Length: 197
Image (cartoon, rainbow, N blue to C red):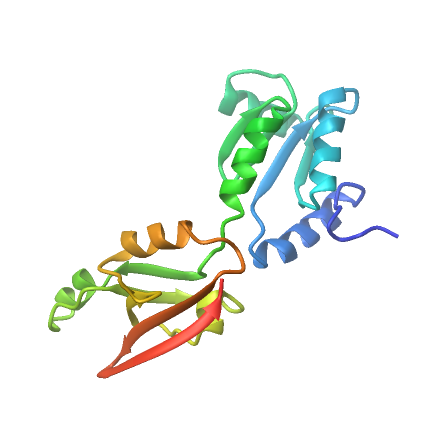
């Protein structure tokens, strides 16, 4: 029986379906370009399978469009080539892969954000420092914490948050599974929520 976390044996269509489902659960977008005879490609796939990381695979011996795409993006035709959320890694470089995966596995908040001061000024409201919440992705940390579009986050873990970059920086310092508390404004009310990122 094939585990959905090891999509490599699936058909291209099945792999895409599994990948799309896992991507919604905060997995990263990983595409690999390989050939059937490449030993480093096999090592790469084993590495990803051991870490239970889903990926989309293009066999460049069968997929000429993918071969041309990767040659255009990297300037070379060697494999494997790995693209992790837009970051290109050429060859099976375990150290760079570990670094890229660790960086990308940081917890995600699941909401579009902007500087509240800019948004409130544009709307002709009193300028408010903080983070304006835009779209909230269903099932995300932001949704589970009860945030809604239009809320303005002013504190994270009892520290003032003045703008979107402050929140992004604070979130990058947290490990997955960290408990967080937020203070936010909803209309004229100040509210507090807690959750796990």
